[in-house]
Length: 99
Image (tube, rainbow, N blue to C red; front, side, top):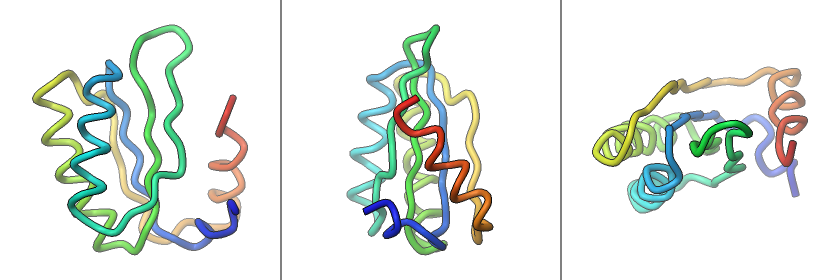
């Protein structure tokens, strides 16, 4: 199942609270054809790191909306888009899920 993400663009954003996380994910999913790869709660805080996958234009559109919406409900602490992840990046992404 994880192979369905291989080679897809990656969008990652981190927020300081779960409400902002879920609202941002909902808006991002409604904006474009993306897949949510994971939502990882921060261990020492109440926020989360979200990883979305899809083609580059869908990921960029989803990230723009997610960051805007999340900012209305909390603080976006980091965000980035990786257009063409290497095999090593894909492996690292899989390693952090459920940790």
